[in-house]
Amino acid sequence: MPFFPKPEAGTWTENWPELGTAPVNYNDSVDPEHWLLEQQAIFKKTWLQMGRVELLPKKGSYVTRELPSAGPGTSLIIVKDTDNVVRAFYNLCRHRGNKLVWNDYPGEEVSGVCRQFTCKYHAWRYSLKGDLTFVQQEGEFFDLDKNQYGLVPVRCEVWEGFIFVNLDDNAVPLEEYLGEFGQGLKGYPYHEMTEHYSYRSEINANWKLFIDAFTEFYHAPILHMKQAEREEAEKLAKFGFEALAYDIKGDHSMVSSWGGMSPPKDLNMVKPIERILHSGLFGPWDRPDIDGIKPEELPPAINPGRHKSWGTDSFEFFPNFTLLFWAPGWYLTYNYWPTAVDKHIFEADLYFVPPKNLRERLSQELAAVTFKEYAFQDANTLEATQTQIGTRVVTDFPLCDQEILLRHLHMTAHQYVDRFKAERNGTAAATATNGKDRANV
Image (cartoon, rainbow, N blue to C red; front, top):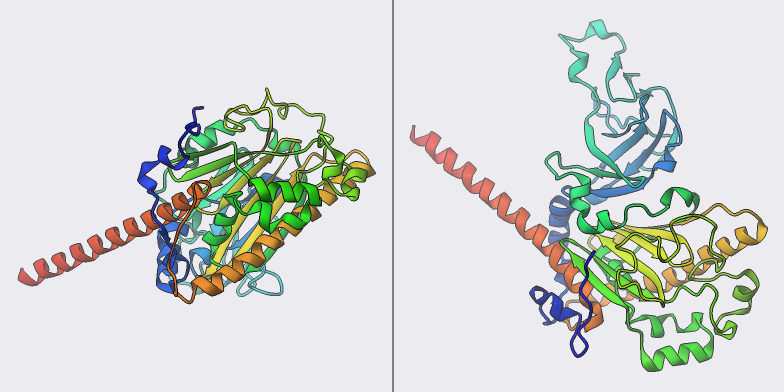
């Protein structure tokens, strides 16, 4: 799987001249009207990752997902049906529009196991395949054909155990959408890593700003200085941090970096608790005994340059799904769900091979807690960023060569919005023309 290496005397950015080198305008992160366009143009048109198949362990298992990113009130049911097929439906009863699956609070996501879905309001029932199977006092209705009133389906496909949905019935198939990166990541032992830790938090910043933070390491030696031992922190601050590789494939991108101490060459580089538990930000040092994680076994998209010092790869699948691999043999995902122009829900999920003893359990917990501390530092900085770019005192900001994926993200998001506006304007023009034609008949 080819990727672009950095020229010896050049830059990463010159590999993608269409991105340019001019300052980037950040109005797309503060303009409420632009955010509403993103809802329609991006989050109703692209494949969105909902979680792992392990959320649905048996027939009848279901979860609900709230998707305000695709419009207020948007709610989905994701279920494993009687044929073990994962399906998705709008969480809406076809009788009077009541939310179908919820517990005490309609806005909360729920999960469980059932044989059918029954509406709380008038007891209409639906099978796990979405068919309307029972109508209370059916004889009171007029020519009601139950075959016409099943749950409204949503495109749902599974890739390597990850469940995706798309609200656009005309969208390309998921594997085509994921493209070369998706093909190049097949075969990683995701199914072996079922020990799961998750975090969820509302962030007072535009969704793209958090992705910006995780697609460059320019900030790492400064923002995260206190997380490293003093000597190591001073060294990083003096010389900076340079990633091993960047790559862009269509709407998606990746960055590959060194690191992933397993174990570190010098134990004085890490804190005492990390030495005791053999773990830290990069995960447990003791690699799990499974196939598929040795350097020579990794899928071709991971560590594409096959660098000996490789430690982590971060893949950004547009619009809001990050898949990040660590050399010691674990991975994590991020999702960013915008709720307003200056707010989003950040979800992080960490996946490990199930521990065999207490030491392994504690080493995983330390990795999860350490990750959370780093993420909080990033989130805090982003909220400060949002307050200032919101003033629009400055709208254009210079980006360095290491921030190439930021350029790509904002350009890609703009392209979706621009295409949507062009299609909408074309439809409006066609409607107006047809109206004139009818008036002239």
